[in-house]
Length: 83
Picture 1 (tube, rainbow, N blue to C red):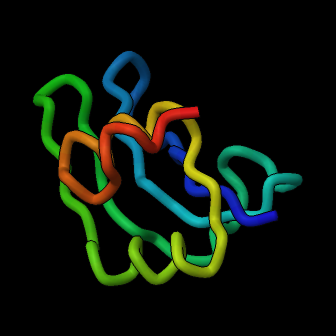
Picture 2: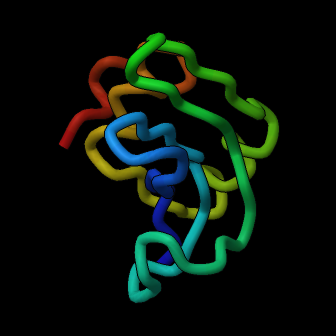
Picture 3: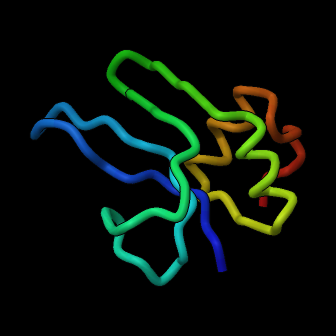
């Protein structure tokens, strides 16, 4: 199953994340199938590739809870799309 999840990178205690599409059995920082965006929780900055995200969701990819909240905030998923 393909998951849309966060991949950590950056300095110690100054983490930033990439939003990626990965197999659910792969390691958190392993090789991603596709990079779909960027998230910096310290500056509250989010950059998303909307067409690629919509394509992955249409193919059946499942976002994690944190990524789902980011997508709802960016109006890519409806508010009722919660589990």
